[in-house]
Amino acid sequence: MGKWMLQRVPGPERRVVRVRSIDDLTRDGVPAFWDRLAAAGSPLIEPDGAGPGCVIATFCWRDPDGDERTSRTRHVYLDANGITDRSRLERAALSRLPGTDLWSLSIEVPETWRGAYHFIPRAESLTVPGDTPGWQWWRSVLADAQSDPFNPLPTRVVQTGDSSEAVMPAAPAQLWWTDRPGRGALHETAFTLSGTRRSVWVYEPAGLTARNRPVVVMLDGRTWAADLPIAGAVDARGRAGHRVPLVVMVDSVGPELRSEELGCSAAFASGLAGELLPWLRREWGATDDPASTIVAGCSLGGLTACHLTLTAPQVFGCAVSLSGSFWWPGSGPGVPFQDRVRATPPSDSRFSVEVGTLEWMLVEPNREVRDLLVGTGHDVRYREFCGGHDVLHWRDGLIAGVASMLERTDR
Image (cartoon, rainbow, N blue to C red; front, side, top):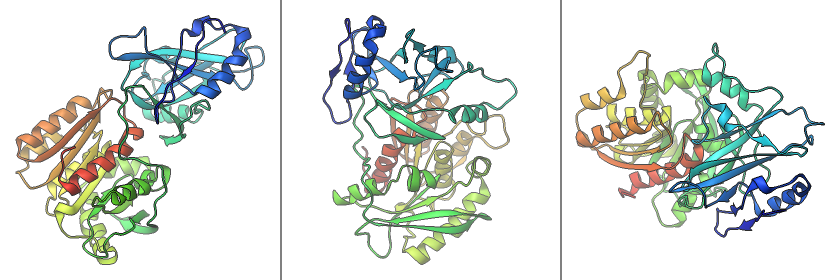
């Protein structure tokens, strides 16, 4: 094994390892390396040799078809949320150790980073096309992405497929999220909202009162009902003695409709306020008190949550926004959200706004919206996390944001 050293580092989420240098690994040492990596867990973390506040993270992919003589794989790329740049894919390319099935890439990352990652093996190199919208092309690329079987943390559904979760040694613990199943009742129903028939999931936490229930409407509801079920985390708050809401998760149906509805759509806002909430009050005992009526969302959903709370404070008194897309409308039609904030009179509405420091397009717009909301007299809880546009942060931030709205705390 040469100078290789693998050492387990203690911690509930931090099964990372310290390494000496992957450059010292020889072909003959690779079989033993895979055995030790399986026991220690991936990615490998080297605390020394990086810049201030950073570590060296080494990501390893094992070619199931063997070495270069037997495998069709000629390129392997790392997609690490907030870390790798899709416009500079050459910097995210792993290298094969000649004559082996080992591909690896060592990169410098913030020691507080947490994020989703996966590998993209290819027979041909990836080239960003000039005639296809970037997001459509990237979704097609991710169809071939693979999670890391050496990572000990649970595989997660992120974007279009399974991803692994990297947690650096100084990453803050997630205090609000749990993977435990919910103890309450989850109901799925077909509901016509704004003219579109879609799934709506309603979760009743155990012990929730029968009437005048606080309610949170979660946009992109399939994520929180099916992909990353949020019910167990809500229950955990209740068991700890905190106030919990009726959780209503609204399906976005598809990318095109989502972009339309979550782009500050007046029709969608009218449907939520005039169709969904009356039904929830009538059939599910939801409150009509705006101070206990929350709308929550991520990305465009965060934009829409804040838009609803600004324009209909008599209905939605609280907004929870994770990585809100406050760049909207970009080059398209529509009044910029910042101008909407400036034109809106103060109200009793409250906002929880979070954004990742590695979201280069969103950090400054989120800070600007925070300042505008505070400047117009609104109550704002604001937080930044070391991460990208990543559901692995949103899951914890949603619970924390909803809790802060219900309990009027400032965590």
